[in-house]
Amino acid sequence: MSGKLVIFSAPSGSGKSTIINYLLGQNLNLRFSISATSRPPRGQERDGVEYYFLTPEAFREKIAAGLFLEYEEVYKDRYYGTLKSEVDRIFHAGGHVVFDVDVVGGCHIKEYYGDRALSVFIQPPSLEVLRRRLESRGTDSPEVIESRLAKAEYELSFAPRFDVVIINDRLEKAQAEALRIVQDFLKR
Image 1 (cartoon, rainbow, N blue to C red):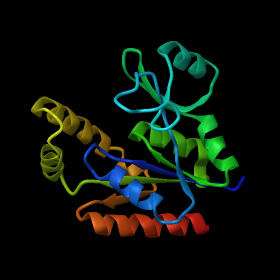
Image 2: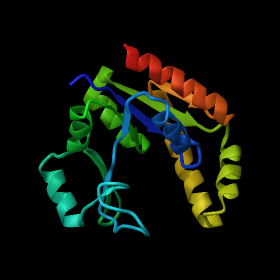
Image 3: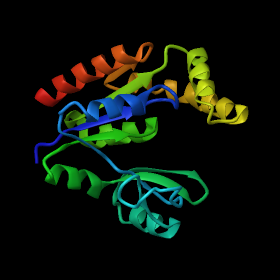
Image 4: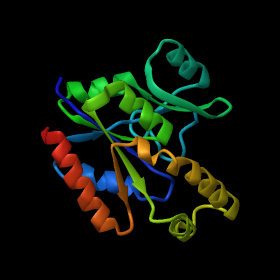
């Protein structure tokens, strides 16, 4: 199993998901790590596609059994995490794993895998730019935007703990930089 891992973390609205989706289409043999959650499916979400949906009890049993690389209880009984079996699944299929995780989870995965993992932090040019991006989405109330901005300040303090920081001031430039960095890492 010679697979590698690429970890992306960023404040909401930084462009992380857009950059990951771009990389998934670049013939790098990257496979997206599907997270587990204890929240119910929304809309057309399917188990094993968007998330692995578990009950809070089943999630806690897997935590107790040491089956998670990282996890977080975001709200009471609302867990999110990365199962070790998900990484094994991708490695056994011959792929490299790409993660979209919060900053704490990203740091845990990097600690666990060391040099086999590349941790990338996507940073907005400023909190004001981040505010404009979140407002232009039109999906969140002003209260949710303020909450995301407060969380973003906290998350930005983690940037120095990542191997690479990409400032997403122009999406095309950030995508090209991410592609170059990931290609170089996968060649090592």
